[in-house]
Image (cartoon, rainbow, N blue to C red; front, side):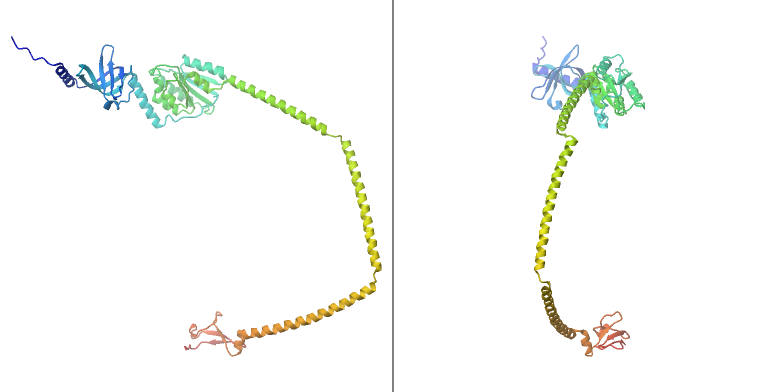
Length: 446
């Protein structure tokens, strides 16, 4: 009877199975749906990748997990790169994940983020012009049969029917949508009758999936909105939906109805404000009239008849005339009494005797003046003689009178040293009396 082969232990079996899987399968890419995503405190991630017929356990260890930017939520469609292996303690077949990428919707989101980053870096999202409020003309790029245009028109009609609305029907879904909107926007911007200060463009459609709204993430549409001469408002989808057209527009509204509400004022609100201001104006006018009437009554009570005013002024003038007459009479009486007093004093004086006394006094003053003048003249002559003697003592002319002379060159400079002259030079000599012109023949040194 042949020998039975040696039995493997369970651990050995699992170890060999793991080695065989890792050796034969190597690194693979697998696409599927995430489920049972678990993130324990260790930093690792454990989850199941499945399709409609099978599933496989997966492990994403902490070292690789920190490089994964995808959110990894249950239900996400992803592509995984990893190694097929086996967890020996439990014999579980699993995929050791090295990288995670979004698939399906995830790919669209990744493309959206890449294009958003590129356009943002180029400044395509820099528009922030103020839209006219309300616009004189509003051009709407939307589907002619969608719910969005019905909502917008209903709100505009209720709030501000004065705005002239023009619908430019364009497809808002599919491959033709973005080129059609770019062409329509270009056509509007070439119309010279449209004024950027008074007119605006609204690009809108209702909600939908990311694929439904993908036309509004077109790069060419975003650039056309950015370069638009007319200001643009974007209202695409619901409040949670955000497209590149929203970023490129001057203003974004969360829904089509909200866009209409932002573009135009509410006429009922304005009517209420006008009525409120009218009531305030009427109350203010009534109050002003009442104050003016009261002031008029007060002035009327204070106003007197001109005849009464003249009578009062005549009485006052009479009083002043009487006071002036009395003051004049009193002044005349006072001056007459003064004149009589002066006459009496003048009569009592002997004019001849006064004349003689004053004449004697005048002669005495003349003698005193003559004597003072003689003394002053004598004193001043003595001072003048003394000053002349002193001046003559220090005068250079006195020195010249003793036989000295002053030599001067042609420029009038005084020559003090023999070495300051040259033979043949002409000098002028000033003597005590007169001047000489001499020529230097020779210089002598002491």
